[in-house]
Length: 165
View 1 (cartoon, one colour):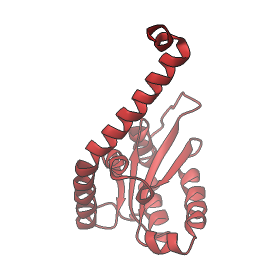
View 2 (view 1 turned 135 degrees about the vertical axis):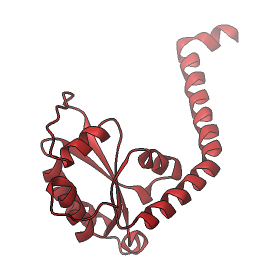
View 3 (view 1 turned 60 degrees about the horizontal axis):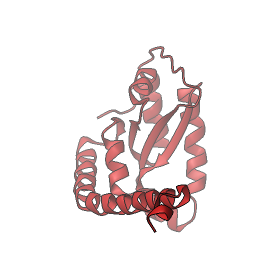
């Protein structure tokens, strides 16, 4: 478990999470290892100006915050200190609970940079893994239908289907 230890970026991240009701924080995507190295105080070079650091968080009171329509305020309060922590790189802050389980599973595959406890993290990851296993076939079928629609539209626009008619 990573908690506030007063040392560099890891401690700063823990303090940010604790101050804003974050129970889990994941670094994921193409820059997850560079983001972790930044937290460890190492110098990194991200040469692509369009790249960002994906930070996924789980909020303790997500449902009540959503019902009270205050998620945007929490987002703003979290983004600023995270942006400072990972400066000069752009942070893409994501409330994981706003996304489907397959997306959340992708974040879990990254690096957990903060957790209120190992038990909480295990329970969350186990729950998401189960949901993702159930939802994945549905998502795959949907994405195949969408892709088929694009293929058909492309063929129709390019004349491939017109010649067959």
